[in-house]
Length: 315
Length: 245
Image (cartoon, helix red, strand yellow):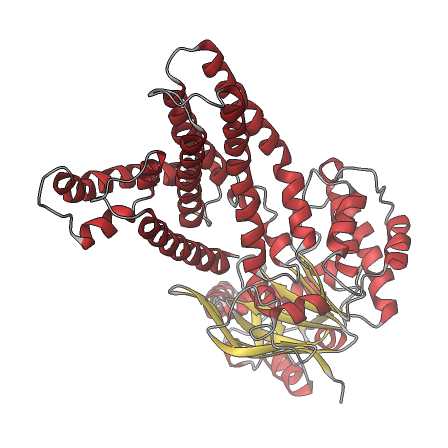
């Protein structure tokens, strides 16, 4: 069994009366790239702050490299590389100065590695931080997160605010630097397409609860969309694992999780004609889970049934 | 792990320290040279008004810029205990108050070394005045920045400072009436509670300029009460800071 680099058990947190996390459970295997997906405000950053010991959990626990951040936050922060969303650094410092400054916090700082990364990431030590572009700023933040050779790197929406080219450039660097060194990467984002090529596993967080977790490939395999014209008396809401329903003029598209032969048969029985089955990308899977989770599936199903009845009456 | 914080604070605060020192020394020298009023009044204005303004200005720039510039998260994620960051920030902010005040005390000593006339400044008065002014400014600075470590705007911290000052003035009116009246009446001693209540107010540091009235209480007692207040205020500030990181 693979050892967990990050283990989260029934983690709860609330800001005053506002419940942000309601019992999160996660296990991030060592050496994996773990995509932590969620919309803005879903609780991703709060989870990360709890992992770093910047917040104390209301209930539950978490460990990073077997260290409890609530008990020994300094040890966790020494062993973790962290890059915050839209990371702001001291603009008055030069790149060389901020590298030296951050190095002062970590006994195991690797100057040789940092020198190589500075060249690789195309950063000039003489440039002032405030003069860096957003892309350069992100690359510098990545460098600062990796300089002490951490075993776990936590990236909190690292490409927030970057243009598409800078985002691709940044992700290329992340893949190059992290996947080859057996580092565990906990990559939080709301941009699914940027996680898809790099993540081995993903978890979807919505309203402070994990609604799906699994290997990226398996998730893509198991979630399917079927497009077909439903029979007037079809009871689509009885389909197991139904995540999302959208309808066109005379057809309906249903998204099903954990798709197997039994579910395919059920859809065939509900259909009047041929069925188009498609695999989804992570973006579409995420959307299906989050929308499904918001309880709108039932409303859409009711609308679809009404339309099917109308079409049948017209015929 | 504290040296990077000390280095950063020094680099951020050093120009404020230089500017504050130059300004206060310039005003002190100008007032003394112009002879618009007595040296003692110049000294009191510099120590009290100058100290309070410096303290307010310095407190505004201690914690708030870290939040306003969005660097708080970056700093907090480093493996350094929040109390060390708090202590370094407080220290360099305090140096911005103490540095200029000590510099202008030196100017006062150099300009008028032996003037012990009624309106002049003797060395003893200079030292007592400097201690009183620095004590008041230190307490006012500490109260302002410790009661507002979560404020993201410097103006908001400044407003807290002004409210603290107003509260201290009102407190002085109430507590002063409990002590001052008996002080100047024969056969009446101010109560211990009244003295403690008065000594809680940092404005009583102004009384350090001249020897305490025998009925007023001892300076040691005042300093002890102020130390207790200082520890309490720092504890509140540290808790607020740790919770907000």
